[in-house]
Image (cartoon, rainbow, N blue to C red; front, top):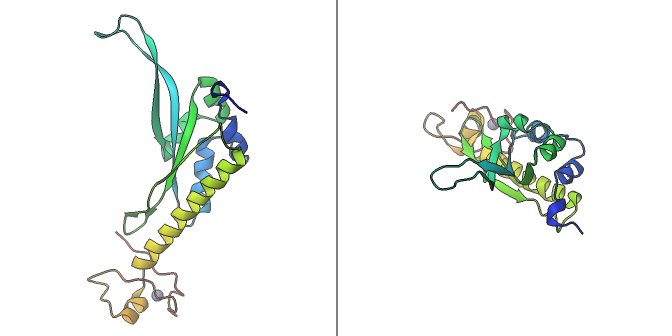
Length: 180
Ligand SMILES: [Zn+2]
């Protein structure tokens, strides 16, 4: 069994063998989901607090912060993070549906390095991603009907968005792009 001191980002390198860094994992998540999902990563590290009116000596304080999508490249690889003494403790996935700017639920997947194998973590991660995809698809289907879909439902597209009609001969139930 691992101890608290043995926690490292090797866990994530093993959970995601095809991604050597958080930025690469984000690239894959974005590319391979229909909804273009986003990824944020929660990091934990010791920050040196300089002397101020409250403390006479510098001291190290454990802080954690979320790093989002486009910022992830700054973290470097899993290995770089270990060298810098930065530990990833959780990841979060979600999606914004284009055109209607509706967000799916954001799902946080906390790593339980002491209790689970890397494979179990990646399984939970991809399950969360699947939920996001499903929700994004359902938002898309509720709002992206084409003119023929709208006609089928008796909806005036100038006034409101139309759900997709699954038997639509025009868009083949794929809907249309909506410009928000
Ligand atoms: Zn249609």
